[in-house]
Image 1: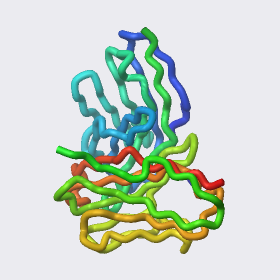
Image 2 (image 1 turned 90 degrees about the horizontal axis):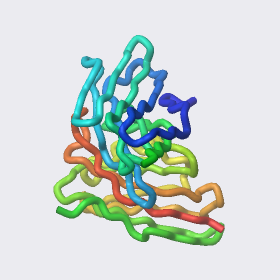
Image 3 (image 1 turned 180 degrees about the vertical axis):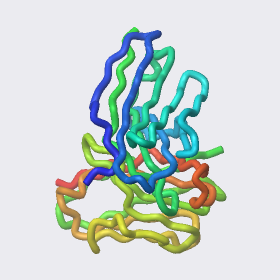
Image 4 (image 1 turned 120 degrees about the vertical axis):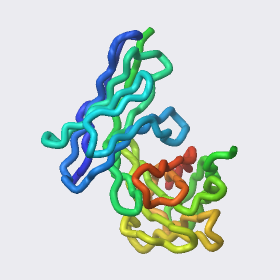
Length: 111
Length: 116
């Protein structure tokens, strides 16, 4: 039973355009969410997070939106750059700081 | 400063053998986590250490898996009688304290384990 799901395994976007990555969760006890980015042969690196008391958090080109009633969050990247090409993981933080990850979305930004 | 390091980066072993995977966390981080990432999936939680003690080992798949952190810094994940299904990338992460929601986990590059 996957508690965090990313239904799009891949996404291709033109450089300069917006990338929108989506994530759904089922456990209503989750109250803190994160996005990690992963390049090949490297570990995931933290990108941005959001608490359930907020519906939006912005950091430069990256914005995360949270819709608690729909149990849905999304990551917007504007403008997308070729260096953003990576696998993006959505995660929910539980007890002890343990992360429950989605399956990931591979983003390809074409020049 | 130095990030989380993991050794070896790659490990190929035969079915039934014993393996040890090592994690060096960021200095001063008391919380340490092990995750396993199978092909095409996201990382899955295995075990969490707070200092020297395993505070939560609920993610370990069975009793062939064991982890230690004897001095509260370096951790070793041990797998006995390896099976082909154990093949995956094993990721280690550390954070300053573990409990706070804003406490960021920093990941190592992982060890790719292949069981033939």
